[in-house]
Length: 208
Length: 427
Image (cartoon, rainbow over all chains, first blue to last red; front, side, top):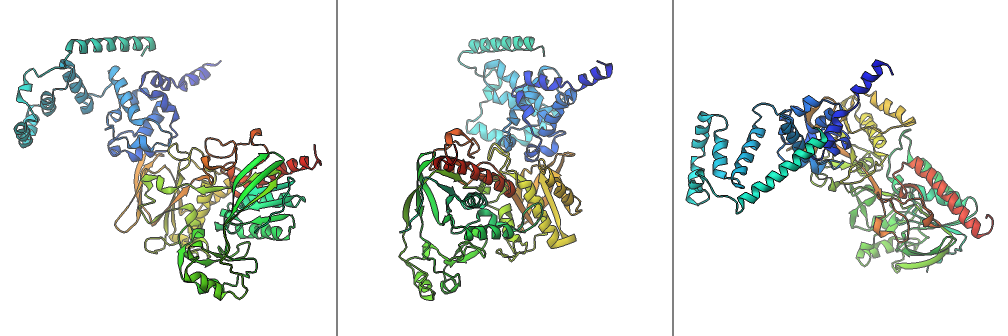
């Protein structure tokens, strides 16, 4: 076979679709998309996306690996499920978007300062400490996510809500120091350790 | 009592639409005895409700007239209208059919003079026009109805309207004593031609068919275009009677959608192309037509028609399955979506939106009075297990009129072979 042929075969090998199918949650659905566009039109945040879902699916099939995995778009999904409900092929679009974001994160391809990714990391780190989300700490972290000046401004703006929550005992200021944990914190960490082992093994097997 | 003379050499045809009529006539014209059972008070089915055929844009009345003439001339054909098959027992070559006959309250002496219709007062939604207009309680279902005989709506029986109708009739054709009856007769083979119905558009929630007056279905639009229809052929919108010059056609409304119908309904692309010409013909350069599609399925000779429509500058094709329709304060439906050629978002106001509605089998999967193999789309599957029961036309698949007629002829041939075997004319 001539070099040109081999080059063309390489070009159209569709490796990225296979990679997505193997590594992305619900990724095996991507090939079912018939490009009708109902998801893109149904997305309430669609106009803020660089690439709407159906375009992402087309890009996956076209092998545009870097463009997809480093795209802001896969982080834009708010899980409203409009697209899933309307998709004529019943693609779990919301889940695929989260799956792609997760995979991009694993590969370290998340765009810098992507706010959704940042918050997700914050949520995860918070959760890992005590096995439950410390809402007070998470809230404070969120306020100060974009720097101290911005954090103070947001905090002042929400002052009244905070005081109201204190008064009605919906917020315990003592949670800011330490905070309470799940009953079996050791067990919780053991579960996570095991999960991480399984995940690492899976990644090693699939060579992602 | 109605008596039906039939033997196990008789062919029963269930459904008198274009497929059932075709199958019945083809069989009867070879000399077989045929009983044609039709639920409506007249023959022709949904074809009678079409304004024009694609792709030639000729009138269905022409072919219907030929078929009606064939039916009138043929002594082998028995037509039962307002009749429904409720049961079928036996096996290939020896069936017994049970048929329920609803009363028409008008006998064969009727001359269709129309005096009873003038005399009665109560009005009802006209189902022939998909509820877009009204009809009287004594009515001829449509201009060309065959049998050309009036019908009394069961709702006026026992009211003064019924007596008025009877008093107005000069031919003693109105018989208020008619009752529902059940007849049983034998047959050797059955042609099942119960056809299709439009998918319930209200189930496609984002398109707002049940909320927005100016979102209608393609079958309703067909009635608007018909000069004998509820608007006298004027393309006006339901909310305020304004002319519908800017019209959106939305393809795959219910079809090819796992939330609705699994199958492609086959006719809708061509139907919308055809209906686009109605708008273009009515308003010439003022017409503005947008066809929203996933892909257009116009093959073979249909492609010539597609190219002809495509050449019209006022007809635009937008590759998009719209996401939703909302109405603005003037009742204009606004179509929202993303054009997948270029990924442009649009929010396009129209005077009227026509949903190219999908075809579903007229008989519900679970409601078949006979044992028969049904596929997952609800259509009848050709199978040896069906014995002497053969599907014709849209009972077997989503088909256009042309293919329905071809399919019906094939079904007639299969039924003829069965009764020939019974008669030992064929082994």
